[in-house]
Image (cartoon, rainbow, N blue to C red; front, side):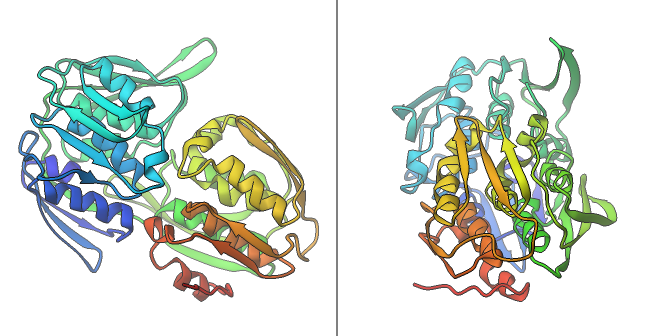
Length: 418
């Protein structure tokens, strides 16, 4: 997205050819941006500048990419032509009102199907900057507002109740945009304020994308729960707004060390070594929840393998992911013999750890098309008494192409079936 809006040619290495990224590439090709690749993980983007996008000849299909759709809502709000954003069956059930609300305050003209896609965006002649106090911490909502802020008159400010992932802010700076970040205390809680002046132009740059810690999380948990494991995951991004999964697993007793720490393209990177260790149940600190929100499906598996009770609260965001991840994970874990209770904002899981034998029974799991649910239960099979069959897994390619091959290389007995 930023490469398309920049002046000049942006070159990206480490590009993950997942369905979400390819859908995003294709959307910008529809709007006149010349993009070459991916080829061997490399992509070349000929930017058209902040106001250089062209009206597409058809609806913009985001596929299953919820992040793409929400960020595009912010970006398209500042264009001089109308657009309609559509997605697949799963994405068409995901709520967009949390994004359309603040964008409408900025003067954007957005209509939805009762808060759901398709999303229709009409040209707004004069977007205005706002100060938006986020009711719930969400990096996607923040990023959409900042993208609209590029086209808004004045200074856009986003106030986060808790720190969320800051890839957008880091990358805006990498593209030459001045972004101010400050922290303040209010009512005993620390808030973060991100400010940006509208109208700034982006300058093309080089981007080296490190390995995704959300993808690494499945193998961090796998090695933690599988007796005898010793695994090294190389060149993983360890941005401090993304390492909640490391903090949570370490609180549970996981043996994870960071080796060869370094910085690549403004993002901290390290090799992660993880060895099998007995896990214990914990009350997950709420300040870590936004920093590990995508990793909770596999963290719930880790909790089931721990000794004692694990309690997660403050995670209502999980209800509006590709699926209701609290409900779907609870359904699957219970089908595999795990005792638990759910709340609107989390789950309490009675771990069955304390020994190296089976934790889960075998059985059949409905992933409801959610790639992270499917991959989490694949890791649960490492501690299952019988095979686990996981249904509706086509969307695994959305975030992790090659997952099955890599899992086999790591020692999992896993088979794909048509």
